[in-house]
Amino acid sequence: MFRPIPRIAAAAFFVIAPMLYAQPPMPAQQPAVPASQPGAPAPPGAAMQSGAVARPRPQRPQIVQQLTFAPYHSTGIYKIGETVGWTVTPGPVTPTYSYKYTVRRNNNVVLKEGKLDLTSGKDTIEITGDQPEMIYVAVEPYAVLPVAAPTADAASPLAAAAATAPATQTPGAPPVEAAARSVTDAAAGGGPSRSPYTGGNTGRNNGLYAVGAAVAPLQIPMDTPRPADFDAFWSGKLAEQAKIPINPVLTPVQSDVPGVWSREYSFVEKWHIPRLDAASLNTIYGQIRSGAEASAQWLTLLNVSSAHDHVPANGVRALECAMEALDPAAYKACYCPIP
Image: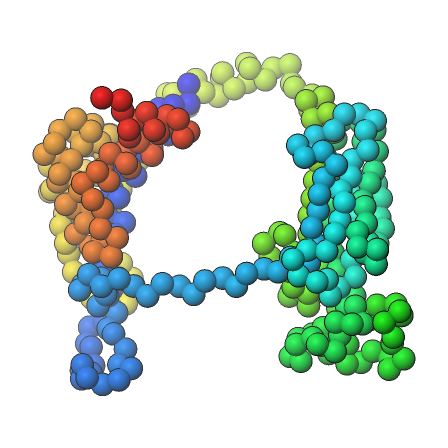
């Protein structure tokens, strides 16, 4: 019932994809720079014009892992009444922080709080799953261990916190409290925008770790009961929607981006259509799929301004399958048909 809408949208994107590769605006005048001058900046768009490969972005620094979590059940799924838990051990990087944890039901109701003690080499986080639910555990650093404080980066907030710690700290003393609010407070807008901690498994490099489990997930009820008129309501809305033609029209406008834009081609003229609308795009999409000439023209237009990301001949089929097939098996059957 919903298929016509995404089909037309996919066809529109497929056909107008060449228009999305327009060259960036070029300044009206380029200052002359000798080619032999060291460090001379290349003019905007030079790489695209010459076909040179753009310089790759610097890789994201690796996020260190100070903690490792081993679930009691490798699947992460538990029965009602079973103990949900994790064994926590030091990670590949020696822990430099003290950690506390909060266990929540459905990431909402707080069920348990505590602090990790890794002095014996491991600790556990446990709770009984007493009902169908999702268990979420947030583990966050709250202090710098004394042994780590002297070696902290001198420019970091943690180093500043360690520098102001009492001189009586000893390896057996309590941790050195960092001069910052908790990671979760910061994430909620109640603390600094940048955490003073690093590491973690959430991808944010703010020291926060998160693990979760499911207790009888197939028995979790709906949060809100299904309305009695649910089917009737949506059937009526879809019937109303079907009365409205799905045919948006695209109208060319003058760009207000500074620079000089060069006209490459007219989409309407190239495809011999009266106007740029959904119905015309769907017609062109059918031509590209069924005709070699239309397919070749679409590929040529796509590569007009995309020397950096040149699409090979089989790219037409790849893009078509990517829009038509919504799972790996369907994509394989579309793109790699059995002879």
